[in-house]
Length: 396
Image (tube, rainbow, N blue to C red; front, side, top):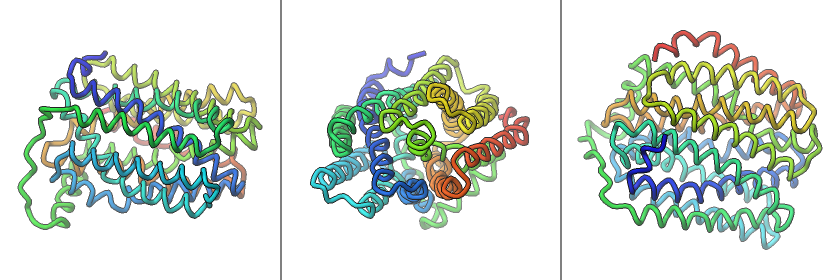
């Protein structure tokens, strides 16, 4: 289950990322609470999420080209440093009492630009820290720490918001980047394939990557499934402050607990993926994950009991990781070295870049028809995806 940890560079990455991601989830939780506290408007939650993640969609094609022609380790060092600076500035503005919603919009936009390059570079770097036969395990273990941090981070954020305010969460996130920067600095002997010879300008290279990705049916199927999940599945996380405040009446502490239960489910799902000996069967895992997310979303739409809602959030987390980590593994295994950066940028665009559009629509619908009806509609869309594409996805 932990074969990838036998490699020194991946161990450093694993531990550094875990500390940093705890801080990142603290910031995500605190920022959502800050925006809702300032505005009391679910639509604003969707707008902030859209602004923060839209650069991944807009810049994704160019970012993939840049990643394919960059030193991945050096690029990740730079993006992580810039993310640390963003968190520090957010903390200073909040501590000084100067924070306004437009500040959150601007800083979220800046972080989104950084993430457009950071996410595909990190995904490719993970595969270069271990031998090819351990890549699947490394991806699954990385998903484990992403989701373990979702357990710890939001729970700590709930406590920190109550005691030190949102600024304390932002400051702790800035400090957490020291761990990952130290880990990246300590790595040596990372084997990266030589960058591909350019076959024209950036736009020609981007077109080549798109033709490669969408010209291969298995890759195309995975990307299509991610599109639907990004648009109508993942926006539930943007709406969690509404559930915590207006439906469950549990406040910031309840928001942290809901997020943590989602992380518990996702971590267990990631560990289950790590037990697999290879990438076989990831298509079937994506189908069952999509159907399971639909069940969890339907439960959240129906429930008005706090602990029952926690159970459904755990269910959503469990099955979401089957879709996200399974598709990550499938794309890395199906792609060749020349195009892997561009293919993984498409993954980031659809996983992260499209969800703000879904978050914007979900926030607007929640303002008009209520959060329960909105999430019920999201559940129906995912159920339709599982039914319509299930057989084809299982063939991957």
